Image (cartoon, rainbow, N blue to C red):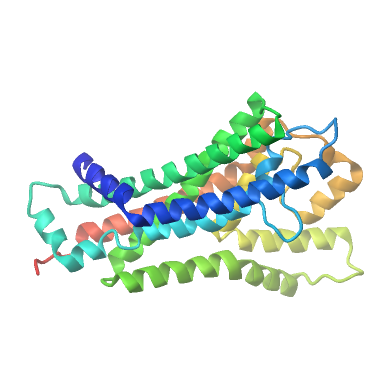
Length: 311
């Protein structure tokens, strides 16, 4: 497995695909960070805490935050690294020749998945480190120990989030013989979960508990609770909630109605300690890990049982 891992890692690092994906994410991250730094003066006061974390979450005007760009591009990178992991080898005939050597079959899929995950980790860690360094240079406020812990866990969650999408891409690569079908299925499912799942969840919640201008705060809270529960089927929702809980220490709930009530009562001004933020984000983290494990387990089982013939 280590030999396959090294070979796949070298192929990824030497490919133009890696360079294009890295530059795409880097440029988007720098743009989002620059916008956040330009707008950070309007929200920061002498008593503001966790100024450094606002570089990753703050957005201004029509621009989006660095966190949103990361949630958008991580699936794209993961799918691009994993959609042809198996079917391209099968189509070219290299897979049958490879398995004719004294190599265990599970070493092939494990090595390919770990190599793609390593490349994804390199991209995520590098981009977050560059953005943090850029923000530290311009803002001039060093992060505290609590902020460093939050950033480290944020990086780890981002890698796990990418592992799910890579496992899904590898699964489609095992299921479909064509690389084109594999990438179309991966992108189609990503668009459904990332874009349309929120709309569907909101429509179902509005059918079960409709809200209007005369609705009480309890009815509105119930509406958002149902919408959030349905929306958590999507790993993008789980990732957004987990990272927002870590990078926004003042957040004590994922329900917009409860957040609004906390703002009116002044509770949002009191940041949570790291342990409480981790406790709030823990169910979402476990959900992402479970989804990634399920997808890879299915692809692993299917790959181990399929018949591979030489062409």
